[in-house]
Length: 127
Image (cartoon, rainbow, N blue to C red; front, side, top):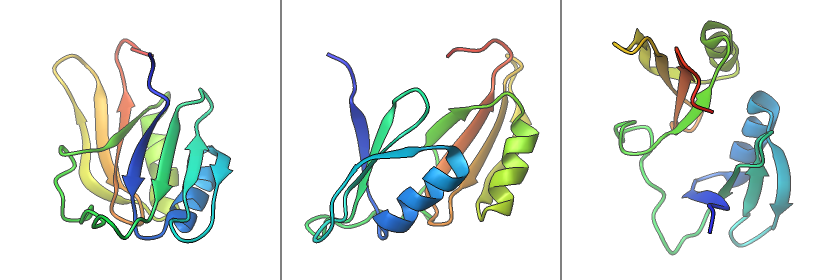
């Protein structure tokens, strides 16, 4: 078996998917309308995220949730440039840029809906 996708219940899946397509290079693989407005979006490597709004479960309070509870991490070649572009696109800083003892550069942002996005520039790439 292998992971096909991870899924998140969000308040506005259409806007969420559009922002990730525009600013993170995702493509829409499948979508459906009411009642859940589900969108499967995939990055350049084919990793998929499903976003939807299902009223059977509450949307987590992503802006108030610690980013260590859940986040999506993106490998960067130029973290400073990627950080600047995402901030210009409406992301905000959750935890500013730090360097770990292993030499990895990390930055935790939040997308416009408060969902945590971690930028990672590894001293030795893992992917």
